[in-house]
Length: 144
Image (cartoon, rainbow, N blue to C red; front, side):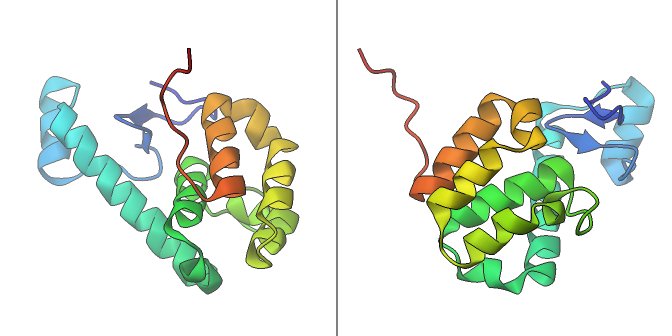
């Protein structure tokens, strides 16, 4: 499928335009035109590991955050890329990142909510903002 940015995508958001399928997964896709759920999980694991590696290399202070807030920034890096300051991707969130680095998580979550990313990402962004604010993963329980 084509994602909202027009990139050829498969599985749980793997961008084939940026990272063509290789090895067994690439061969299987070429043969069948699809991938298995297990292959999608492998791609996701690899993409998240790559996003984490790039994020921690570029912003070493992120490693000092609690795991939930690290998860938020890894997710955002996976979703939009690291990008460049003033251009696109996570690094374009200069004010938000400065607030996070200072431990001002409520203000950072509010800044995230004011972004175009928040409007484009919908429920996922709402969840990530809550995680940034509280440092907790929201419960999926439905309150009666």
